[in-house]
Image (cartoon, rainbow, N blue to C red):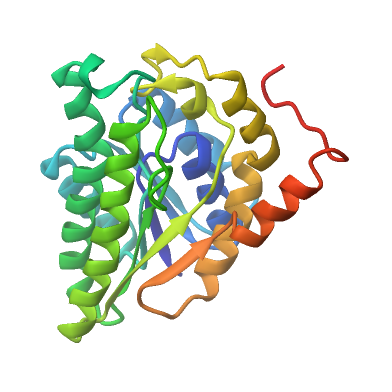
Length: 267
């Protein structure tokens, strides 16, 4: 039985992906920084229909020690890790870069960028020990395609860097003949607490009306996005895979049909 570890998986996209892997018979190791929420998520998933076992470990992806402890916990529980998903992330307060504090800058970069780098490095070291290697996926986001917007400079910078890092990481793995493969998950615009709350829920975000209009056209709830991402991960065998939900063609179609398909996620 195969095993997936998903960081930041007690809610949002991470939680939805965890449920789908479990339904497909995978062992699932959950992760989050809130121990109470993690315990509740573990219990809920253990009682859900599915063939895999469920465990979890509380820790922050900003800490290499916590990431290593998560890896060790998953291996002790399940024997190996077949897929590792660096999903944990926080949004920035919707302010210009000079209006952010150093602590706020550190929080976004440490979790969204450094966490993905450390998680990829440590997961790869573990998977190199395994006979069949494994797959590591990083989450793209606003800025990965060079989009820019006031109040999302820092977040967009971190996600653009994640895209470059993952592509370069996949190239490194290939050139070293590694059994490990890396890829990117592009979820598009998701409507979750992440959309309207910064720094893990510490500060509310007031979205401009024009941004809400775009989100209403292009956005989706995380269960919809997770269904596509997990389906593709389950069959992917390629290194440097790019699994994308909101493709350019799909976005164009939604804008063209927006007048006939009105949605309001913010009422």
